[in-house]
Image 1 (cartoon, one colour):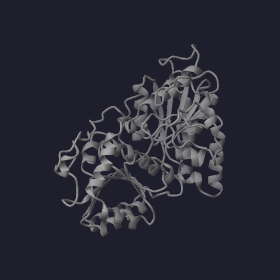
Image 2 (cartoon, helix red, strand yellow):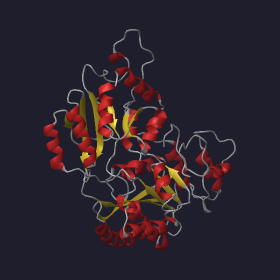
Image 3 (spheres, one colour):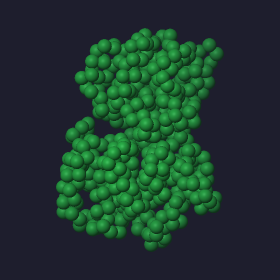
Image 4 (cartoon, one colour):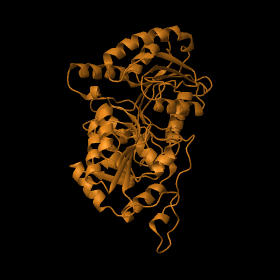
Length: 458
């Protein structure tokens, strides 16, 4: 979401009339609404059972969400698969049941894995009968959740969280049509849809899947626990001060003393993205440096390292620990790369990448593509730069012309934003209150306070 206050469910303007009287913008609007919908007989937090179904128990975003639930007092049992990729040696410290192994993108293999998972789930059914919430990530887990609700956890409500719209869901052809049909049928049984970007609802769930139920926006913000202190903007700058003195807690400012530095941290994906960065580095060898940290995903490893060999101003620092290394990583760069060019007609255009929140917290402006959802966020706060096509030419001109003064203005504005712009808070607490005190009657659409959802789905 592109405002600094807590995100809430998005609804049509007519639904806003149902908002509780006296609610304040950015306050407990969703929580108040939920509290009014639950009676005194609603289950207490110590009796509420959240069963979290995930595609990968070692996934960083899964770990983050489970910790948020536990930090808010919810007992959680994780049912999940394993995948052979980064963090594969991790074992959660909370109660969990392994359902088997799956492979990214191989849907036939995943169907076989689901059949095996059902056998595991039925063996553990005594632990699942009293669940009140089945929290499912991706379509595989949603199918498992609905089977569980039908045969085991009959009192439970189903919540469906979506962090990406995979290409298969928006492609043409019979397989994609059937996949969308299955998801649409499943959505009729979903109590709450949880999305990481309003673009997913505006472009897919509302027009394509015809979803009219309640949905909650929970952005990919940083978890509060373990975060280092955020850099602070200087209160004032003395006349004639050197640029390096103008931002407290940050590195010296830039050209002509050294190149501009772009950081791309996290899951490194998309050959088109790496190709563009390669061309920029070649054309601006003395003006630009690019630093990669993280895990190569949809990028050919041999080709990637050949790119590094051909361009001394592109470096790869390997994997990193999250969040302990974030401060040092972002202290060494001037920009965060938020141009996702892998699926530009759908998912890349609609998502809000977590690197926007990481970079923003540490005072690093983002680079984005004009018209993408993350560009709406960047432009609304005026804390970065968006580029139009042809990207290579517009970005070359930008780095040739950018001044220290313009950069400093953007960075000051970024550091002046409240922490809540980038750190998870009220939206997670609202979600947890709903789970802990779930309504006994079917939910109505929650209200949305004006200004909290700048781009509501129509």
